[in-house]
Amino acid sequence: MSERNWKITGYDGAKVLFERFVTEGALSEKQMMELLLRLQAKHLTNEEIISSSLKKRSKGRTDHLEVRRNSRGKYALMTTGSGWHYAATLIPDGAA
Image (cartoon, rainbow, N blue to C red; front, side, top):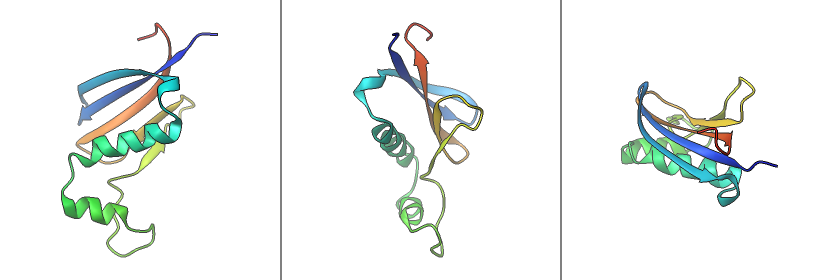
């Protein structure tokens, strides 16, 4: 069985500015989601981080720090927001 890798990509709008590969076994899905949030938080103000950390239905909450799964059937995770955002996709070894 072929090993898969996480392909982590950072975007500024549609422009790719960062790319890194990590073996699938090095991070669980939960850890990958946390990593994407850490990368995304670097581009937010303190106020945006706080408002994004509030409970879902709280007044003033924003969704700058959310990770969503790709809906097209591929195994992928992506942070929300415009401007800087990050994606992690599981790809077969050698497919990079």
